[in-house]
Length: 191
Image 1: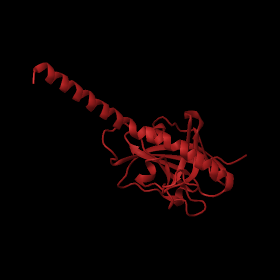
Image 2 (image 1 turned 30 degrees about the horizontal axis):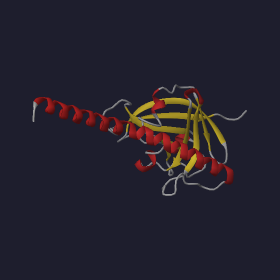
Image 3 (image 1 turned 60 degrees about the vertical axis):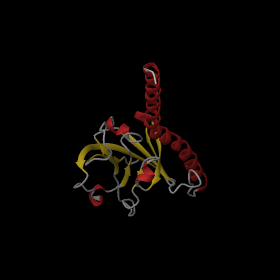
Image 4 (image 1 turned 30 degrees about the vertical axis):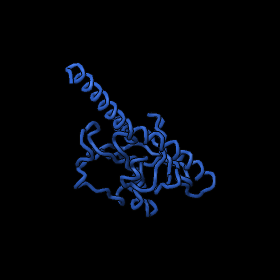
């Protein structure tokens, strides 16, 4: 093989590798956005007839709420559960935390997709949570960085707070890690 042919083959291999890397980099955000469209449709059906609707026939999750942060143009469907399989498609509500009346609503999301906006969320900003039963308003009270291994959420102390959780730091190269950003928001009482 001549050196020119070798250079051409190497160039095509590099272009191919770059294309594969680009597709892999865009796959997760693209899947997250497409899923949100289907989730919005399932959520609209839930609001219309009060029954739980899966976003696609083989889904093992369903919408339970809608999260809006108007100041950041956020409008996301929240799913039941917070396993990795659920969080791949949207933010997920911890089902154990919301079992008793007056307990906090805990919602988790990935830092590189749905909950990236938490990086810029400020104390005092308003959040809206729509459930099939009501529209609830919250105001961000605090943001904390905690150790995931030792931190715990005290449901009795938080009352009816909204708690948003994501991995931290936002631009980390490794998945997961030991730190979490936790946003605490207090309910805004209707006047």
